[in-house]
Length: 601
Image (cartoon, rainbow, N blue to C red):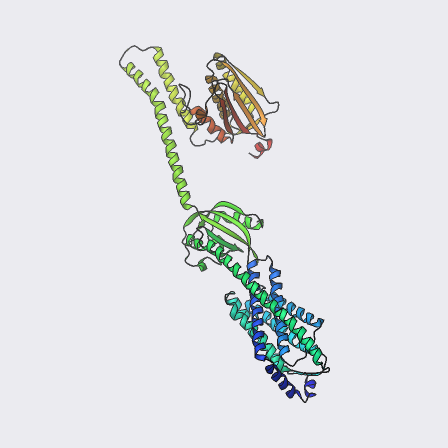
């Protein structure tokens, strides 16, 4: 390159003539037009880079290729506009297309490095160096593809243009990153200026002596073709820039709406990734008693979550389905001040800054939990009041009788055995009420065993056969051929059978038949007891099982309530189906006890 410079004794004259021609051909106008186009291309590229970050991995390459295409096309347009205004010869062939692809490819690499996960300084230096290098390559390549006899290059000016362009482009990228894309105009002007630095110093740095002289007609044809191409390319750059600007403005408006919805939400909306809080709205700050986002962002989510939920959350994060939301589920959290709050949580897997994250919606239900607790306590008091009133009523009647008989005895009057039998009967009634009430108290420790429900029912029928004969009632039982295994307390299960069959017998004052069926149905041991009594209407059915509610003259209503309690303890159920004038069918259902249940227990 030095020899080429020395072999050209007319270098200064040629350069001076090139610059004069550039100014005489409207260089100031072309400079302003070139700066505008390069700034527009830069502006569009930065907008598309911003869309890459916003897309969270969806369509990321499309935005990157779009940014590289617009900036590469802008470089080509600016490059040829500058050459068009100077005395440099321009050749229009397929190499122009190659030049455009070179510009797009190197710009794409620059964007890739800028969006990588490396340190900010490294990203800015490397991406801006690539962008400056592509500007230099495109300019000198377009000058040197024409037929030439000799050329000379000022190495100092070349390196100076590269250094200044690198510095200016680096400032553009750094400002864009620091401002988070909020000052695109300044970043775009800086990057556009870096383009013009290369073009301006490049005209000063290179001198070319061409081997061919183009005729005026050929030159005019090339100029017209070149002008048409540059015009179309310029319109494409400007049109694409305006379209992206309009699209991003609409997207920005939509983002602003969603941001307002999120920020004004009464529920906490937050995002955490890598077990750290990455975002939390204003409601979340108020819920966790934080004054600033910095008090929560970057901290571990486990710092606030109650320890009993830690293992469950870790397992859920590790095995989370990307498209499967989780919840709502109740969780307990601690605020910054240490206050315990009860919440309802919905979790949705998402992406944040290109990484796997979880969007979480937290609703404070502390007040609701208090109200529920108050309601439960109120219900308990209400039930306790009902029980107390019922017990007082049921026990007061026999006590009144006992008191009267006792006064009669104390008066010295004659008493007969009938009075003693009545007193004994009343005492037995009080004892029965107290025993049945004890069944409704705290669960007691019983020895559970695996029993055949058929055998328990047979024993029950044997026990009640004598009473059935007195009532002129026939007990007809049908049993499944296979054993009906149930797991529980034999005496309690037998008590349920006794209570149900006795109720059926007492309802059939005119005698009749009670059908009993013991079968295995859908994995359950089903015991059906069907009587031929008067039946029960729907209003009375809805009250069955309530304490002291009975249709019998001398009943307490506790027998069926105790039966419901026993069935609940055995994970079973009781269902009643009745039709007035036809009869009542009562279903007693137990879970079938497989053999391995007994082995486990």
